[in-house]
Length: 238
Image 1 (spheres, rainbow, N blue to C red):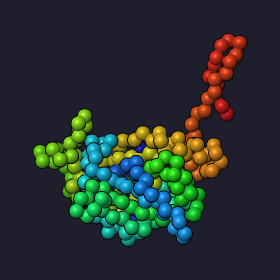
Image 2: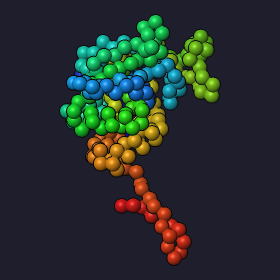
Image 3: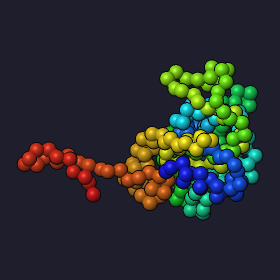
Image 4: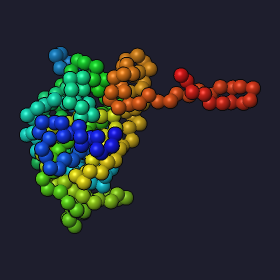
């Protein structure tokens, strides 16, 4: 998925259609807990840390507000705003690990009992993480100051931009979290753990291929080694 496609999808959100600037930050959210006791069917994940992302940018968690997100609590798949892509809703979102030491966001999401919700839950259970993509309006961003370079800099990584403040308006589940900076650049992460979990679930008959593909996991090319009169060859399994 390219930057233009993501921005077009975000523009369809009622809060974002007239926004001058939109940013997206992706992360592999660590699954803190799956709470499915009683009437609950929740997943609790840690999202948006202050690490340098794949686009050499830091989106400071403590600089984001959540009022826009809390107006419409729906959680979608890959920023697609239709009934089939609705996977759950925000029960709560909180500063983590505490309001005083705000390094990331903890979000509790109630999963729907539909194909999308069940797929998210199964992949999270198998891999211990889930891809999260957060749409936001940046209100203060630019090159890092000397102080910010010291605070957010990491060995072996180049920090080129800091989003100091913004308004979070949407969260999606995604297979490959993408980072679109406020300048519109795009990078894609390595989702091997999620892809392995998704495809294992398909092979086990727990999830169907159509649902996993909707989440962004393409069917892998499966091969086997076969001994022939001409030696060992690798063949594609159809």
